[in-house]
Image 1 (cartoon, one colour):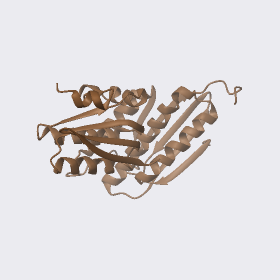
Image 2 (cartoon, each protein chain N blue to C red):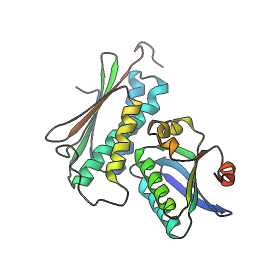
Image 3 (cartoon, rainbow over the protein chains, first blue to last red):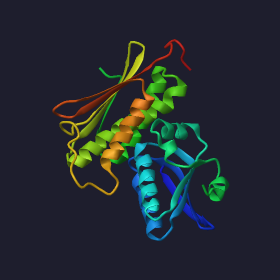
Image 4 (tube, rainbow over the protein chains, first blue to last red):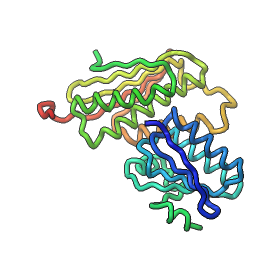
Length: 113
Length: 139
């Protein structure tokens, strides 16, 4: 299982749908995608992780990097994830306090905080 | 002797193979099904860290993964050949490698109760273990 990435926009939000495994081998592809989006002026990102089967700390690092980039432009990076085994990794590392994590793309799109 | 031993060039593309082999062997020796995700993640983190240490140090070499079924516990050892503990090279990448390394270790220590991280002259060793359920139960 490799990594799949696709993007679409909803209003001023850009949704990045991620599928497959985010690990030390595939994470650079996600990093490239996030960097490209920010460079193209997309500062409100939603990373939909419902199709993710595996996530490790390299993937977490890429998401943190993405968050730093959008914040530099006063943007936001929200995650969509319902899978307990993935959420557990965010909890262990304390990143649940760093990322807004939503149950659905709709919820993430309408979130303003 | 290890139940299964694996050596791979310290490259990111081989980490997935190590995860799959470790999970398969863990299942085989009777590690509880509910813990397999944890085993997979922990061994992946340890291997990613080893690969990262090699890469950052610009050191070729192999990562050794030993999967050992011993005295009702399943041990995994991940050993690198990246030299004495993480000599961080300055100015690497835009996303901090040290940060990723710290996250990796945080995941391992957060997941695995029995874990030991040591460093020698030739490289580091991460040793982790999990309980094995009754070996007489076999599907």
